[in-house]
Image (cartoon, rainbow, N blue to C red; front, side):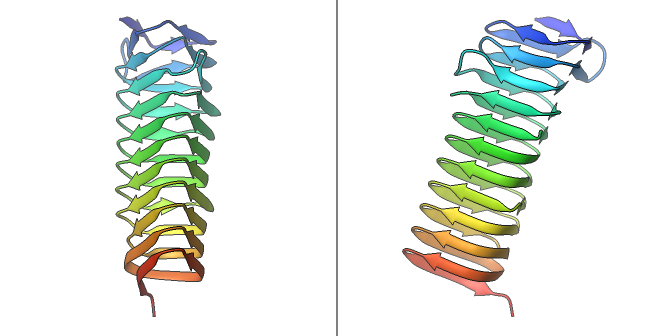
Length: 202
């Protein structure tokens, strides 16, 4: 295990590494953090960019993850126990956050799971999205299923399979299979290939 506080430039992390903050609660890297394999970070992390070099890296952050620009983990997994903030997130397999995420754009090949809110202008996920909080953004596209416990506010929702939401405001809805809203929903346009169940706000 490596204990560090502040790295003035970049940080190259070897395979199967464990990192924690030496004195405070956050490891601060003023440059890029590059991973050669799986890594556990036993504290919060602040960095300029987060990059997986070889593909398939599993990165676990036991705290908050704040990235000034982008997260790039090809075929990788990112698990954050706290909150995730970045401009651009591109992860191959899974992103799981405990307390919500905020970014401009997020692309996940498989699963996006949030224990809080999801705030992102553009959200693209190949498999499933689930959020315990609210979902806010411009465009959300998911190949499989979309479930949200809080309200949903989007300009465009595109779901290949099943969408189950708790009301909100979505201007344009396109669902291939089943669409269900248990809360009151405001919308302008809706196209559902299978079954639609909804409460419409008066």
